[in-house]
Image (cartoon, rainbow, N blue to C red; front, side):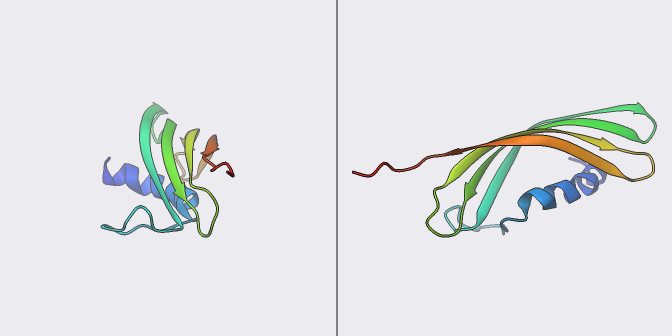
Length: 102
C-alpha cells in the first residue's frame, strides 16, 4: 500500500476502528480490540483524480466486558473526488459464537 493510498484510506479506517486501539506487540485477547485483514482493494481511475475502489475485509472483535467475541465480514465501495472529498458505503455481517448453558 503506498503512502498516498494510505492517507486516503486512513479516515475510513479510523471510523471502523474507533471501538478499540492496537499497539505493536499487544495481545489479541485484550478487551476492546478489533483486528481486520483487507482481502480485496480494487481501485479504478475513470478520470484523472477520480477514483473508485471496491473493498472487502474480515475482522475479529474482542469486546469489553462479558459480551461474546465475534467475527465480521465487510464489503464496501469508496469514491474519491478530484477536489479531495470522498464517500463510502457498505455493510458488515457479524457472527457471534455464544456458549450454550449446560
